[in-house]
Image (cartoon, rainbow, N blue to C red; front, side, top):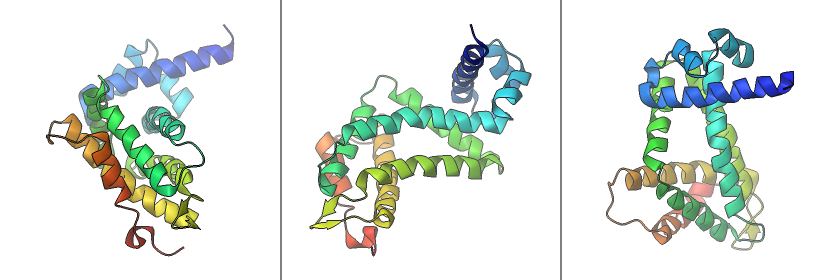
Length: 202
């Protein structure tokens, strides 16, 4: 095994261990236990990620990356803005039926709890989430709405509102707070955000 292979193996082991420990312990997650679970030392964490917070940010990226990859696959080129927004909403609704949806939600809440309790981690976590939200905005920019292409600024405003709506709806479904929220309900609620008040000026 090459040095690069070993480095990647160790990186993956630490991310997997951190995800398990953070999901279980939230802000009480201990770096020593994460390293032990990965069968490595805390020195490996500092070598690969720079700090515990560096590991947490990498964990967010590792978690959100595949999520946004899936969204991009769900929204092919050629769709109008309303169709693209509906496709993203249906993708979110589909994730609610994943057998691991409750475990994923627990992990997300644990990460938020970490950020709320650590003033140094909070802005770094926010920046990581915003970077991924830019990918969502990129799915909308340039798509036609009422015959006019959406500007990047409008796409960012829509992406922010849409993420907030869909995260809230998804949590409601996973936690059993809603009786019925099929894909079309998600899509209709998402399309309702396409207004001049939400999009703002070009």
